[in-house]
Image (cartoon, rainbow, N blue to C red; front, side, top):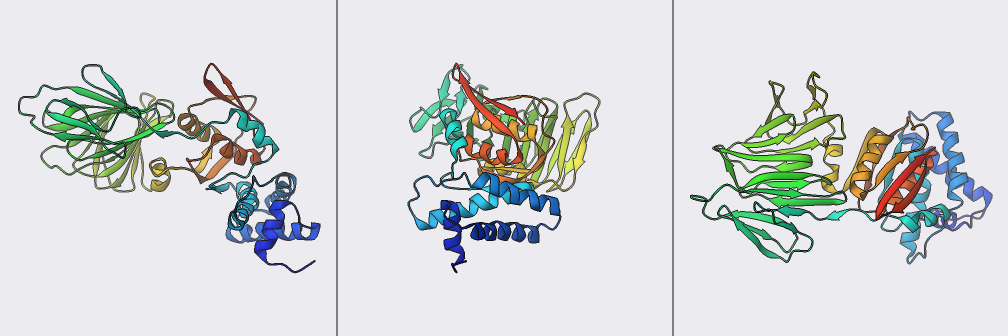
Length: 383
């Protein structure tokens, strides 16, 4: 075999110019390297990774590469993705996708990632689509000025609340949207897709700062010892003075999960009270009569990954993965036949088209059909 450096060899592999000997060198090198780092991988899985690389990656082509550096990077992702998926680990943060013939077919009905957007409903019922509203002041309610910044965020600023009547506002995101707002006390709230938060425009009510949450939200609460901050969901109440925490209260999940990042919170549910320390999480089941579970070492990085623009999974089921994709890409998911019992571990940026994520999942012998009807998109999962 002609001597060549690793960079040239990877580029040749991606472009399909390798000799059989060179192909084996690339494939064996990646499998061996990953096996070295993940020692639990069996010989059978290693052999399966070899076969996956050979059968799948020889179809890959580069879509009009513009720079040698990009070509090399994509070549490495192409080979590494297969090996990592075989081990239940997949990382994909490409600025541009590597595509094959199957992906090009899927792309006809492809779905772009979600984006920043929300609807603000004022006390008088007026709805403001924030993606369409001009920057500047949006309204004044209960002695509070509501404005949209140049960064697209909504900020509440107190003016005079001495004689202001109570007025309720609701910030809501649809599937495929996320948003961040600043409340009158300076607290910041990030809303995940298909979520809402309802609050008094002046925030303080009966001596407490009260909000109601559906879906999922991440909170950075400003300290105010005189006015505890209370988050209400359907079956629990979380009270804090000043802290960072996440609440997942989607109705299609099995429980309401409250995770403390820093500070301290008190979770009340079913007449039980739990004081959490950083890193702890409570799971309050939607099923009546179930005891509240406390997790001592919660996966903080995975739980708040959505806020940082990532999907991050740790031994997640296919249904868990597809629920998150459904919310972010605003699609319906259907299953044809038995559902895979595989688990998924790894991370991927949320800023990619749906087809790029589905293409990675295909390496686990899953197939996806994207269809569109009456402006609704459906993913059908088959094995």
